[in-house]
Image (cartoon, rainbow over all chains, first blue to last red; front, side, top):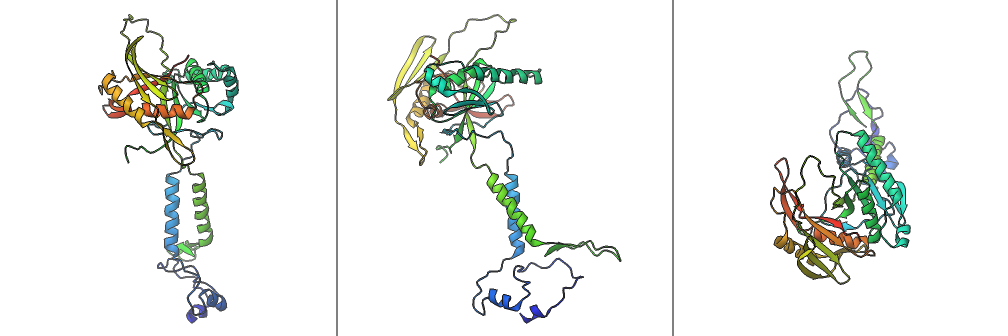
Length: 195
Length: 189
């Protein structure tokens, strides 16, 4: 240890790549600090860490997280919507999102109706605001892609406690507006057949 | 300190070796890991299909041929039982009742499942289903009749049971996929 403190100057021409050894706590310039951290002759309370393997671990973790990172905002679920869960499901597709929570109906974040009004009326009805928004979306899609067939797919994010009356009204309105292929967004649970 | 040795500077030129300060480097890695962990999406969402069965306009160049009505499964969700009714047009082909035996899964957020209903639907499709050949790209149709007050989670539990039986279907590229045997739509009354 005396050798550690007798070296006064660092050789500027020394190669900077060194064999992998302990690096943390190897350059403690004060003897009393070194004595303290190394335990005064007893077992040290501070453990040395091999920097090379530590950095390797961090780099591998960063690479893994970057590979599995998804920055797409298409999967965002309205914070007021609690989705039900199902087992026999398909992968999600890119389509207009209609969120239905306990109070409101939203199309891609834009208000398109009230669920309370439907519940109070107590019968199936066409939701005019939702119909107008979806119709505009369909016409815009057709203008942008005149040579393609319109898929007519939309995804409903419906809260698990919303009554069937509201679901049917939204479903029917979407079909009237040219979106007959309606999908319900659900949380995926692992298949019981594979267990 | 860590660094990379790329040889000396060659005479009086500035040295090309450089040191990396390990402390900010490790800090950067830690912050990157923290950011990626916080923004990671841990829940996966999927979808359950439905089709409103809105017919398109008829092709004016082809002559319309009257077709015999296909068998359709009418699934009624009652208070204490389900009824599975196969109908061809207005004619009832068969009818069975399935008692409602919900199986609750999960912890706080209870998930309701109907495994008995799923089994019966599979048996019914094997006995009555009209589209079974892998080259047949059409699906059997199911109409769901449910009370207007039924919560959506119960509808999803019934749909999950309905989509449980699967069959092989050949895609246009020649590959075979397992797909649900039924396509569902709501009864609107």
